[in-house]
Amino acid sequence: MTYLAYAVAGWLFLAGSLGIARSRHLVQAIVALSIAQSGTYVLLLGVGFQRHAAAPVFTADMTIRSAVVDPVVQAMTLTDIVVSATITALLAALAVQAAKLHGTADPDDLRTLQG
Amino acid sequence: MSRGVRMAVCAVGALGVAVLLAAAFTRMPAFGGAHHPYRDAAVGAAVRHATPNVVSSLNFDQRGLDTLVEEMILVACVLASVALLRPAHHESERPARTGGRVLPASRLVGYVLLPVTLALGLDVVLHGHLTPGGGFQGGVILATGLHLVYVTGDYAALRRLRPVAWYAYGEAAGAGAFLLLALAGLVSARGFMADILPPGRFGALFSAGTVLPFSAATGCAVVCGMVVLLAAFFRQELQITETGEADR
Image 1 (cartoon, chains in turn cyan, purple):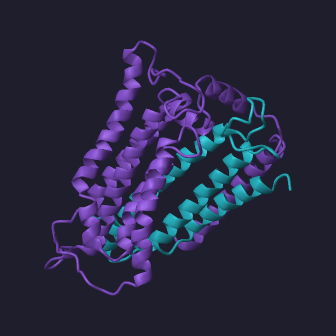
Image 2 (cartoon, rainbow over the protein chains, first blue to last red):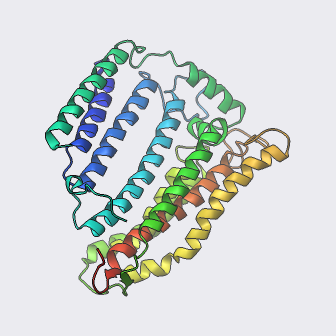
Image 3 (spheres, rainbow over the protein chains, first blue to last red):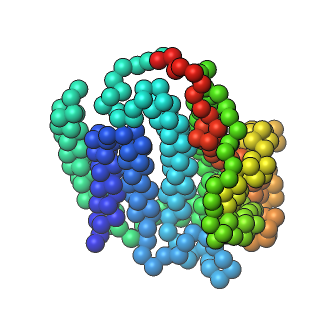
């Protein structure tokens, strides 16, 4: 079970990347990108995990020596999620306009650039 | 590039990445182990600054510069999305259709949950330095709460609830306040994004130095950014139509 979290992270990243390559619709490509990005969340949180440790929020009955999971990677995951969400919105806006301009949202049919 | 060739190239690349990942993962420290040097340093710094929530301390104090850049990415993405979703020159805006049937249950859920969600969002923003939460999480909850009005089937009420221009100002004000707070550290000669407020008592509402103001500024920028962004998508979907012949 030691490598399960890392394997899941790698699997999500690769599955998402493959999803982008074989997508038939721009929205499908955007969702696949989100899946690939989810792999980085799992990887980061997996790196910071410690067995039987608490969340990194200190209360009165905890001391500085209490075992907590790594908050550094959690903060990085939060940054990751925020950037991922905003990029998804930007890509969705691009997909809306591309579909309106070309009448199709299949990446294979969007071969030429149009002004 | 044909589809077959593309998939072949992709498969070769994916295989290479998979091998590299597997090689890296086998040499990583054991999963769930107790060796976390960055954790120890971050926890020590957070406790010295009287911030119980170490993640907030990292986001708004120790790694504040990252959050500043993240905030700018957020603003840039919202700006770009709104610019992309403007009506094009062959499109025009029509008033949104009203009416339609909404289940009483979803209407009730929307109206009941609106105040609850807003209170929860404010709580998450304002106690982000003490309990799990912070500006980003609370901002998203607040923006979601506002859009519960749309679930009740009342787009007109949603538009009354969120005059988009004010939220656009709010987003700029939130991001600007974040930058000014960061510069205030420079003015006080302690360094960019330095902790200029006293740390206070551990666990008190007004404690943790500048974490709370930074978190509140972020919350303001996030809730306003989300509202502006979703408003652009709503307008695109519900109000913009093509006029005459498209010129493609």
